[in-house]
Length: 68
Image (cartoon, rainbow, N blue to C red):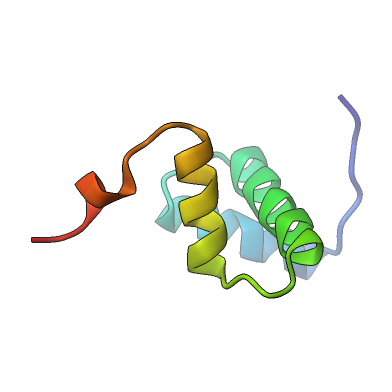
């Protein structure tokens, strides 16, 4: 595990987002990093498609999550 130095304004954005998303600051930063890596590797996919792909990879049935 290492330390990542980021801009103070970005850190504040991570802190605010982590509160909204009920994640720790580190978990929020890790989520954004992972989604960013996946977006770069799959530039034709939308954010929603990336999240769906990761849910399926974790064997979570996304059809069960749809609103009725």
